[in-house]
Length: 101
Image 1 (tube, rainbow, N blue to C red):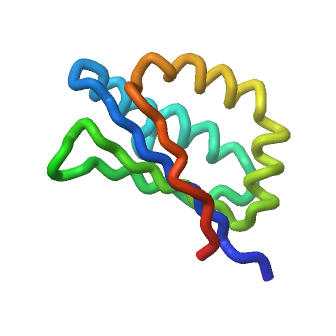
Image 2 (tube, rainbow, N blue to C red):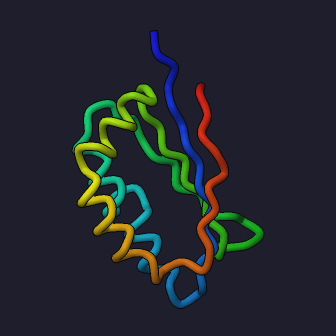
């Protein structure tokens, strides 16, 4: 049986961009809506740093790495479009890593 596949991102967001960032990356935002269209998506944890409210962590969970790769193959155009639309919302985006749970 495949292990769940998890990847983690850290974002730094300016104060004026936080409301829109939270709308796009939060539990009902554009990213989650896109992921939900794919087979194998489990959920996204959306975390706001208590000590630094401009720092966010997202943890995206998939049933398998294969499901995640299939999502990217099937929805690559929508992914790039949404990424381009959201690019101005962040100061930095750092890929923390991919993990199995």
